[in-house]
Structures are given as C-alpha cells and as structure tokens.
Length: 468
Ligand SMILES: [Fe+2]
Image 1 (spheres, rainbow, N blue to C red):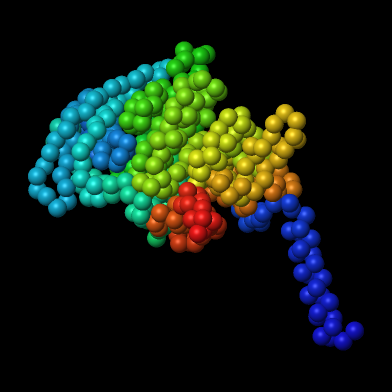
Image 2 (image 1 turned 180 degrees about the vertical axis):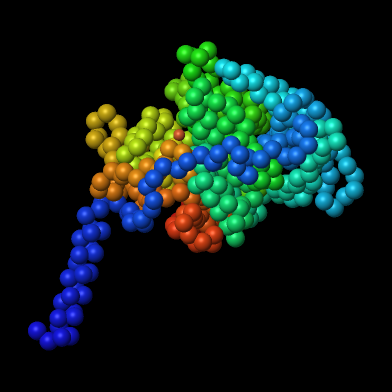
C-alpha cells in the first residue's frame, strides 16, 4: 500500500470510528465537554455579594417583577431588617422631572426560630410603555436608587430578549452564572426564572438567613429588570416536624407575582403578556389533576392567548416533561400526560424547565397519540409541538446531574451537564433565536443555539400556501 493509499485508509478508518461513536445513539448530540465534577460550595456569609447596603435599616434585597397582565405595572419588593421604615417608592420617568410616589404593604413571617425582616411589596401602576424609569426606596435618611425599563405595549413585531436561569442557589458557580448573564452581549431585558431559588432548605431547619443572602445576591440584577418567578421544590419549605406546615411560606412572602390579573387563584400559577410574548407559569408542586384549580385555570387560559397580539407562547415550569438524565427521570411524566396535548393543540413555542441540574434541548416531539389499544406510546416528531428546554444549570450546591440515560433518546437533540444560562431573543413575530451559554466559555460564546420559527405563524403560512 502506497503512502497516499495508507493515508486514505486511515482517514476512512477514523471516519468510521466517529460514525460508530455517534451512530450508536438514537438521538441527537451528547456533548463530551469535560468539566469539574466536584460539588459547588455556597459562598460564605461574609462574601461581598451578600453584603448589606450601608446605613441603619437600609433597604436591601430589592427586586422587581411584572405587576399586571399587560406590562404597565411593576412590583418593587425590598426588605428593611430592623424596622418597617417607609412603605413608599418614589419614581419618575427618565425624560421627566415629575416625581410620583406610591405606597405598598409591609409584612413579616416566622419560620421555626427565624423571624424575617420587614418585607415590602409596592406595585407601581399605569406606567408608560417602553420607558425608562428611576425609582428610590428609602428608610430614614438612607435612600437607594435603581431603574427599570418598561416593555412596549403587547405587539406582535416587537423584538424582546428574555434571559433564562434555573436552580441558581448561591455558590461560586451561581455567581459565575449570574455574571455571565449580565456580561452576555445579548442583553436580557427580563429574566425568566424556572424555579429553585436560594436552596436555603438545604441548611438545618431551612435556615432562612440564606433566603436573605440570596435576596442580596440577586439584587444587582433583579433590582433593575423583572425576574418572572416559577416555584420549584426548593420553595416548598414544608417541614411538619418543626411545625412548618404551610407550603411555600418563605417564597410566597418574599416574591409577589401578579396572579390575580390573569384570573388565577394562586401565586404559583399565572400568566403575563410582555411585549411580543405570552408567558404561562405552571406549578409542578401544586395539584394539577383534573378539576384542580390549576387545571381549571389552564384550560380557560390557553384559549385566551391572542397570537396576533403576542405571537410567542412560552410556558415555564420547574420539573421538565422531557428529560433524558438519570436524576429526576420521568418526574414530570404525570404533568406531561395531563397537559402535553394542550401544548400541542395551542401551538406552544417553547417550554422551559429546570430541576435537572444540566442543559438539554429536545426535538419538536409529542407523545399524545396513545389510546388504550393502539400501542402508540413513544414520542414522535410533531411540528405543532413545543421545543422542551431544561435549563436547571444555574450552579447550586447540589452539583451537576452528569449521569444520562443511554442511548440518547430520539427526542433529545442536545444535552450537556455544564452550568450556564440561556437567552431567548425574539426578533419579530416569526423568528426568535435561542442560545445557551456555558460558564466556562467567554461571555459571547454560544454552546448551543436554535432558530425558532413561531408555531402559530408558521402554520398560518402553511395554510395560506395550501389555499393559494
Ligand atoms: Fe428542583
């Protein structure tokens, strides 16, 4: 064999090896990215990211979320540690000198041997769309100033960029994730948080001082852009042994959401419109079977979504419906059985979940054809189905879920156990660009990405082509 022939044979052999390596998978791509596998440690209490602002009783843990259904209101929340202080938020548009003031409510709660500070929630209503506002919270002589920008009026062609973080916790890796989100050149305007916030419940008696450190940690971002909340299992804080029998007590006291504006009876499931998106938040840890309040709300909610006003239909939940990791495998299965067919019927564009501490993106599949005799109980390609994205890789102290089911199932398009965050960048009513960023890379590097073609408008185009 001549040298050239030998080189060709070697090349074919290597290509063959590669094909065998990938060909044994039924599904998509499993990243072979090499990562540290030691557990992440929570940052110590005296870390700079947890530092309380200076001044007696200074407002801390300032965070924002949307305050109505349409995007013209903001809920400002903060905590004063020593006494109630002022309930008021002073705010003004950046292009105006006219300052306004609105008063909110203050509450406290006890959890075992912990007593919270004074938790303030203040809703600023009737804001102008697409406007930058400054706001001030104060206690005595201590004032703290922040800002936010309202979205445009719900409109089908408004570009808008959402960030995505889940299962964040408060470790050094959590800090890297938040920093990468902040430094990403694709600037997120609102963060969609898919549950499991502080991981305070991993401390003895669910030490709620770790809820406070988490509130101070996220303030640097959540004080300036809304974080849209989804509850996860680490928000349950249900411990009858120590007398804590009210599920979600710390979470629901600290994080208000505008649930009544969407006709919900619980802050654990609700919806908002924001620019060109309609966002439905579900609760994996509340009853969702037939006739439950969540079921009844969702069945009346989905037909209300007007895709000519808000083309992008996004669902958030904590436990994923499709995940091929070993940890938490099929925990979302009962919710999938209940609701997947609705998501296909109403052409949901994307379902974001957390819970599994890794990243995974699905193909557009559905598994809804089964009846008691037909045996059709495997996921199949379905162009009306959403893409399911697991983004529970915020970086909490429990570490990564590295063990994956083998072979990679056909519904799984890409999976990788690395910490990171995502962005969902809506360009117009038909196109959006999703990208996932792992923490080990530079701020602008995309480890995985996908162009989204809007499900509703895509089917409209197909119908018009068929008719013409
Ligand atoms: Fe979880």
